[in-house]
Amino acid sequence: MTKLWIYLSMIWAQPIVPLSRVVYYNDGRIYWTREILLPLFQKVFSVKLPAYAYPWSVLPQPDYRIIRWRVSPDTFHKWTPTQTFEDLASFLASHLGSPSWIGYLAGNEIEEVQGIIENANSDGSLILRRANGELFWIPGKLLQYGRTDGNSPRRQAHPAWRLIVETDTILPAARLSIVGWDSLRPWEAYHLLQLSSPTRANLITFAKLPGFPEDADPIEIYLIQADSLLRGAWHLPLQKIHQGRENTLTLIQSHLPYSEIHRASLPDLVDSLDPFRISQWRGWAERALQVLNTEKVPLPYGIVQLLDESGLPIAQSILPFTSPGNTGYIPLAYNPLLQLRLQETEIRREKAKDPLTGPKITLVGTLRVQNNSAKEVRLLIEKPVTGQPVPDKLGFARASPLPERRGPNPRYLLQWELLLRAGATEVIEYAYELFLPSSK
Image (cartoon, rainbow, N blue to C red; front, side):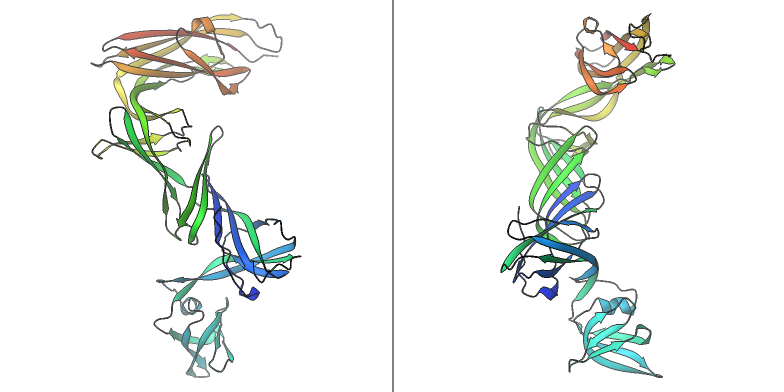
């Protein structure tokens, strides 16, 4: 892990602890690590953390022991080249440390005082340090105007935490590591997929991160994309993050095999188990590209812009989360010339042997596929079923168990893959069994 060491010599200065690592989840959660190396290490010291959320923990170190630590709200000021101000107080607060000329009301007259802006308090009052070292306090209600040296840089206040740590060390220097959770808008992935030949395509995947509340250079980033079934992680070392604006990072560059295919995702026709009810379905197949992930990392879910060999846009679609070695399908458009009709029929109902289980039903499905186009198509059909497929009545279908259940029944995914000649019609039959809920 890359560490950004900041050497400071004065404990009262409350040095800013920089980011060294961010673990960024796709739901917007951020787990961050901040590290700093402090010289002239004391038993009690203070640092600032420019974070919105409360720090979670100070990590233990092998060369000293942390006795106790505490935090309190604070702010830190960052130089900024341009800034607009709503009132005089915010203008003066942004010029801490600048030579200034302040006009204030003294009786019925306005007097002017010159000095360095030492502090701008939350109640609007101001403290100046005059040339002789004297501190001069001006109540906010008496302030009339203020001007600063035209070359004075502006500083903007940002939320922070002041961390005070007590240790048992007398080392001349030691490392401090602090971790915590924060949240921003979720990160997103988007892809550019350019076809380079009839079988190969160039893929560039970008990660789009929302604006951070601070600049960070360089830091280590881990991006996590997860849902109930899938989880992927990507490591981006030494990344520069810019404050306040969207950051786009290159995540993956690859040369992948692809092919054109038609897909049909059929529904589970069992509408209800209690009372038992089945339906019918009619629809079309969808033209798609299947992309084989030959990388060692997964391809994240995201919008994909499809380009032809000259770089012109063809279509925009979605690339699903695709694990290494697996195939991701990019849907393009429905083909009305490739029609499908599906229906299921109950052919047997018998009493179950288990008294706690309802009757067992055998269903036969009939799928009719008609290719009305003038060319041969490759077709992949997927259909979930509620129940147990009958092995010797599936034809050339593949049956894969699904992780969920429905009532007392498992769930399976049936898959067929076939070449359908121009003008041809194919009829596919299958059978499966399911149990209804017990009436007792």
